[in-house]
Image 1 (cartoon, helix red, strand yellow):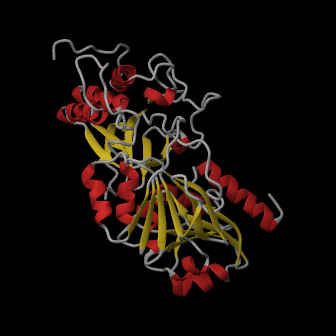
Image 2: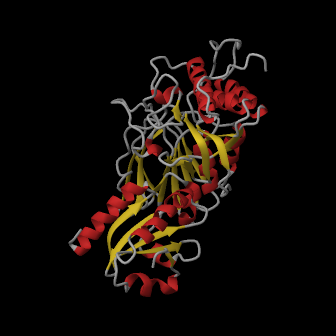
Image 3: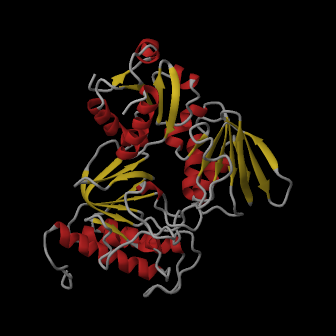
Length: 317
Length: 114
């Protein structure tokens, strides 16, 4: 667990094509860079089966292309950390990102969180937050020792959190909205091999009920009648199609459609805070656009941190 | 009392329930990221609201009794208490200005003044 507060030059939230490309540029220009990401298959590129329109790449899965991008950034010195950012401090001169596992502080921050955020909450979710509903197994898992919990989601973040919960809970009900789970085979097998995991695929978490605290969940399961599961906790990692900005807690203004607003160098209203990729709602959601924006923001940040007026293009390196 | 007080289960009754001043009780644990996020704000509040409110911190790892009693199942949970009663409960970290708003409203409601 990272409890140290190592100062970085650049803190990048999100390791998709925008964040990974930005990291490649900043680390290559000698800036100490950290990328915080929830997993390989928690973003739009990571879950794409086939990419055939990224220049120079004839056909790869999204996860393969993303792995290449991340490896390239790592090669130049960027550090990748697996964590979920739940809050930031953008007002101070040093920008801080608070994760479930650590605090990441830098001189500049690049927000590249994408647009797989949820819009609507599930019935009962808000009411029982902190009374059984949680978004952090690391934080709250220990409260559910020998109790039954539900995990809703279908990506590697959900699987990892469920795996963590199997250490505490007596039964873990894994409710996936889809038939397949976007996570490495190894992780899925590890989860399925646990004796206390029940898998529900193509199942929808409809409601969380309780009496002061959570006592059950209602799920609809692949066309069957609604099922009531007796649970004490519900850990929710579902996704949707909205820009992920909740962790900003109002520190940056968003457009009517919830997108972050930036200038032509992808800087937000706060100096040294940039936003790139799907979180700014491009009308074209393509890997190459996100990557291009990551590069521009990285060069702008580098220029700003080193006190120059113009970005340097490193033809010769 | 310009710093948060770390309260054990044994000291909870006296420090929190019998406090003359209103109390913010922060249930936290060392491994919890959101708790670390709210900690500096609580430190500030303890200083800035010295004499108006007591900031009490309960490590749920070492002191589970009252967390269980109040049904805490997610941390950080902050209970805003007065005269031994829970007036308001805040689950999850909040940025400093928002937490101060919550605190000001709580103090207004229990003291009936600004």
